[in-house]
Figure 1 (tube, rainbow, N blue to C red):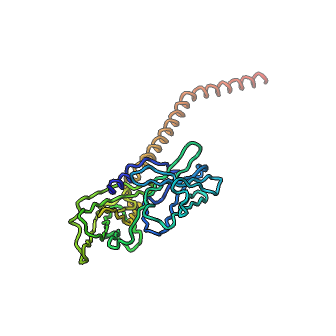
Figure 2: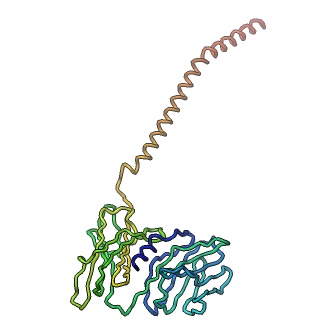
Figure 3: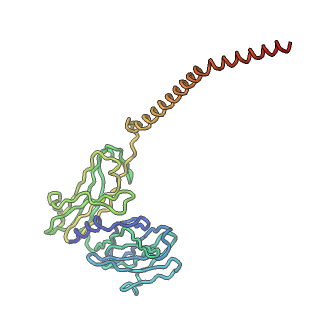
Length: 318
């Protein structure tokens, strides 16, 4: 059920405006931790600002609202006397702080801005609770490949290959693991599901510790291109909870190789313009020749007439 709700949240949410944006779409916390949720708001929406919380399976509820010209926030319902929560508004950011976080704080948090009668929502953030006492649950992501350097965020050339790995150390349970791979494209509001595998028992091995198993899940990416760029996340549903990876970023360099396709359009356009100029020049020369052909004898006749008149006048005067 939890896995279904996760996929539903990431894939089938209502579209939101880019005027209100939460950069993060996923964040995990442990009990007692201070959580900071940040929201970026366009300068065009300067009226009322709000934070909403949605517990999975329930309707969203308003936590707090703040008028643009006021410094006193108004909390609602169960959050009215909750001194663990506070908000800050600075320029185009609206921040929600949760002190001494509890498991009940888990859920989906939306930032909203109201301008007159229109409310614009952010893309939303899934705040996930992690039980710190469960020390046998660990998840980590890493990359491997022939062209992988030592950089923290390596860049790949088009055509390269890379393997994405998701290493999970969990307690053994009757349920099989279900692995999800998501990709968050740069500039996108939320990640999209690119792969799901519900039968992964063959990728796990039992550790020497009692009831502990280690699993490594792989996602090979071959012949990379610019559309493969983004941050890849793995999520493993196991033992009634979901473990989220820390994300692996893949950056693709722009291709510097010469390609006829890249210059085809400019070359064809230039040759067409050149042909048009030559045609115009030839037409102009032809028109000039036609004009000289028809105007030449008339000009000669006029010159002869003028000469005769001049000669006659001179004879008369004499």
